[in-house]
Amino acid sequence: MSFECNCRYVGFYKGVQSAGAAVAWQVDSHEVPLLNQLIVNWSLTTVSYPLLAILVMLAVKDDKQDEEASVNPASMDNNSKPVYKSWQFKTNEIFSNFEQMKIQVSQSKKNFRASL
Image (cartoon, rainbow, N blue to C red; front, side, top):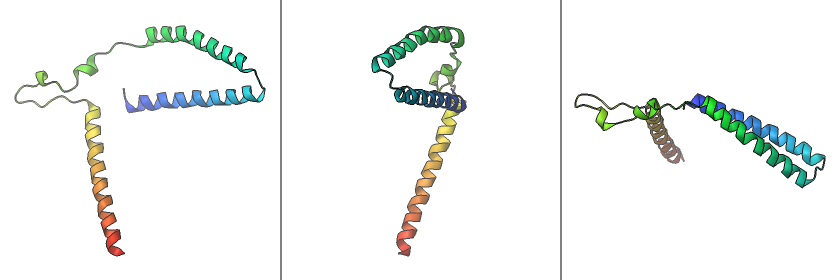
């Protein structure tokens, strides 16, 4: 799953969470009894599970190509390089940048201490 797709899921979740907080605040300000809140909560949960099952059956596809693209020693011969997923390159790039930043921070700390 791509980073962009994950960001959209997080944004959707935060939107639903904010809407739930707004509704909960209004329900609390109208002093709705707790038992009624519990009944509504469980009713919505009970209704949402069959809808979720239908959504998963219709929208989720089984894709096994991503699993086969990872590093597999059996897929290499003596002259070829291993096959990597694209996120592995990004991870290596991020870690190398992080190491460079750590070196720069330690050098700037030494320079600051020397200037005192």
